[in-house]
Amino acid sequence: MELTQQFEQAVADSKNLSERPSNETLLQLYSLYKQATEGDVNGDAPNIFDFVAKAKYEAWSSLQGKSKEDAQREYIELIRKLKS
Image (cartoon, rainbow, N blue to C red):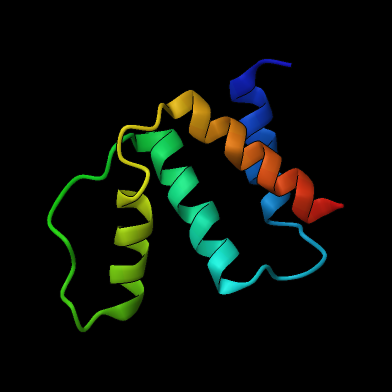
């Protein structure tokens, strides 16, 4: 199966996990997804008092320079671990 198809399947699988992942894992999934689909973070950082948006922005920003393909592979692997 092609990497893009594996990634799309992992995204679909993420919606049907038996247990809700921890907030830390959800941030990791979010940042890998954004890096895989949009590339490096863009736009201004959110307001310091918007804690959720700030955490998401910082998680995504930490992946700066990671290729979309590497982000897809890491996302797929993380979903595999969560499913087992």
